[in-house]
Length: 231
Image (cartoon, rainbow, N blue to C red; front, side, top):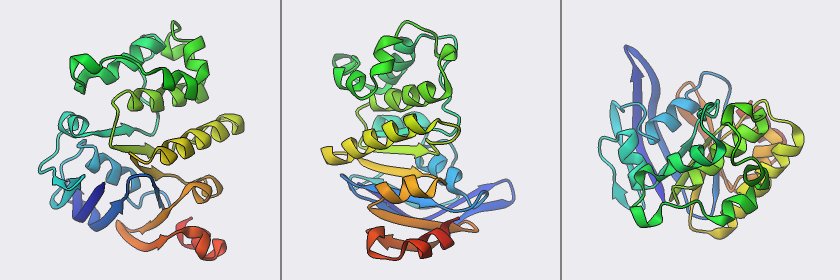
């Protein structure tokens, strides 16, 4: 579903990503891990069109995307759940979800019932302001808002950060169910190793803006080795 070749990204004179190659298949969770500052969030921002790339190509479902803008990426089928959630605090839960309509044809502008099945608390609180929700509830809202777009590719940046264990477990179950559907590729940037290890179909470790390790089916290799190279 996603193919990246030779992706290079700079902030001013500082090179953040150095020739990244990465693929993500539909029906799988591709995990990207590494210490702080290695370029994980920058990689997701580049894929989502939030920062222009200096070199390299990004293709989605076999189609080169060229010079991406955030709106163009969304229209192409890329949904991004950023670190920090970025929900609209003064809008209701329902209005936050409706923000995902912007890149959809008018006939598809409705919130699927399944989203409320995946995140029942959002249905209960759909008339409350986003800023009144707990951190875990806001994270569920951010993921649901991305799913409103019916994406081909879902980008998740640190979805467990600052979240209570019960919500982390629920988010893990939702990601697993989305993978089982088989029609969406999921790229997960995560530092909570046990959470990521339990979900990953393919594992990329980054170091100094490069991919330092790529492993298919992490359960086929030693867990302690993966933990060592990715944390």
